[in-house]
Length: 348
Image 1 (cartoon, helix red, strand yellow):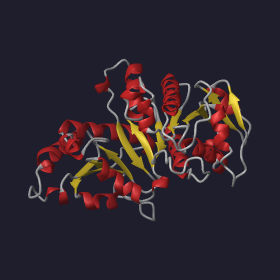
Image 2 (cartoon, helix red, strand yellow):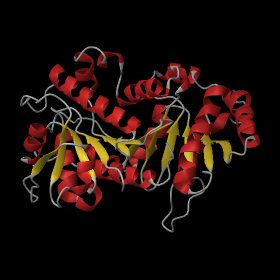
Image 3 (spheres, helix red, strand yellow):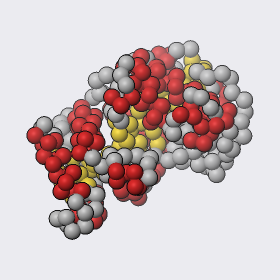
Image 4 (cartoon, one colour):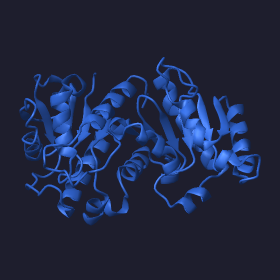
C-alpha cells in the first residue's frame, strides 16, 4: 500500500484496545501497513492483556506514513489525543468517550485529507460518547460522526451525504434502508426515494469491489412479500415501481422477494456460487439477524456512501469481559481484511 490504514482503538474501557493488540499478534500479515490512531499508553496496557500470544512492542510514530516503515512485529501508535489516564476496564466513563471520539475525529479527517487509505474503527460506547458532551453528544455513534465530517469536508448539506450500513461476512452481504430507529419509524422510512437511494449507493460502492455491477435482491416488507397485496401493499405501491426505475437506470436489481427466503438465496454456497451479491433489507433486524446468525465474530460493518473507506467489527464494547484478556479479535481482523480489499477499487 502507498498509504497506511488507520485503526482507532474504540472506547478505552472496552475490549477495543485489546482486540487491536490481538489483531497485531494473531494476523501480522493483515496489520502490516496499519497503525493505531490513539494513545500509546493505552495500547501498551492493552498489549499486556495478550498473555497467550507472543506480545509485540508498542512504538510511537510521528506521522501516518511512518507506519509503512515500522519493523516487523511492532505495533505503531500515533499519539492523536492528549496522554490518557489509566481508566478502569469495563466502566462507562465520560473521559473514555472523549478520548474515543477525539481519535475517530482525527482519523476521519486524516482519511478525508488522503493521509490514510482507509479507517477501521474498534467499538465505541454510545453512552460514554454522549457523556463526553459537545460535539460528541450529537452523534449516536460512528456513522453519524463520519457522515457529518464528510459533508463538512465536501462542502455539502448533511442530507446530500446519504450513507447506508452494510453488514458482511464471507457468506452474505446485506445493506439496510434504515438503521437505528424504531420499527414504526423504519416502516415509515420505506419510501421509493429512500429505497432507490439505497440501491444507487450500494451499486456505486460494490461495483469497484466486485469489478462489475452487483446483483441486488430486494427483501419485501411483509410476510411472503405481501402475497399480492393480501398481507400489505408496500411491495406493490412502493417497491415494485422503485425497482422498475432502478432497472431503467441499468442497476442489476431483482425482487421484492419474501424476506424469510431471500437471504438463503444470497448466501454463498460451498462451491462459491451465490444467486445474489447483496440483499437490500428494509429495516435493521431484518437484515442483521441473518448475518449475525452466521457468526458475529466474522461480521464486518461497512459504511457506504462516504468519500472514504470505513469498516468496523460487528459487535460492541463488551464491557463485561473488558480487561480480562479473553476478547475475540476475529471480527476486527475481518474488518481490516475488508478495508484492504476495498482500497484497490475505491476512487476518492
